[in-house]
Length: 295
Image (cartoon, rainbow, N blue to C red; front, side, top):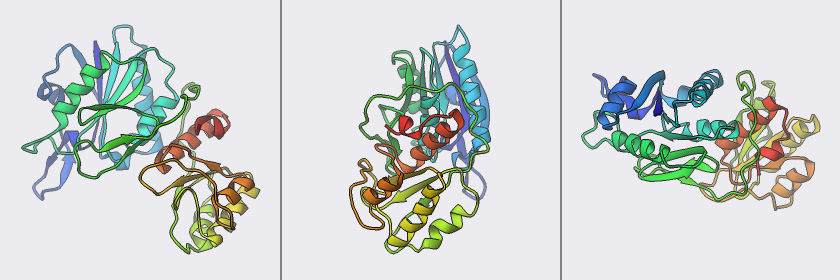
């Protein structure tokens, strides 16, 4: 039997009187629309995924693990908003020690849209869950992609997700709690002043992810502030703001990626800034070297 857990998102949204999309549809209604039977459906939360906190993510992961523990469940399908699907997918993947698959899906169009894509995506995710090898996947727009390296590449296309090539999956962690860790993302732009990093650092960060330019470069002033964090043994991961391709810390100069790496900064590799943040938080929570989870 498949277990379906729902968390809201566009797949569960309808338009309110003002025309805004809000999650209103239950998991049972989604399953019926997808023509699914022999499934166990439970609603976890009903949120826009841009609002999911680390505490709520901990709850979602716990619920998924509870379902995976059941001997009568062969796979778990999780419906989720697309805004933060890549984060939840990687968090589940980094803590997936089960011999069953988890498949995440959602929609670009609301449930009441005349050409909604949600029921088709859910039906496809259910079918994939019955055939996939153990692991965590996203099924979207008729494609099934691995969680690691996943990123949303288009705001409206029905096949919105892509997955960057990556090496061997790192050894997973046992389930850890993520709530309480403060790891923000700072976006870079040409000539970014030191204050862009300093203001965030002043909030008391446990780590920092930088969405850098190119293959991993920042302004000279920002680079100097990042260096101050590294001197305090605060981990810094350099990702790229570019839509596709890995982060490679290759350039010299005060804000160059190679210079930052020499000071101790880590490259996100195939992971987006969003996924790099999750990997760093999981590493901190599990007491793992972040390098192990950024491979």
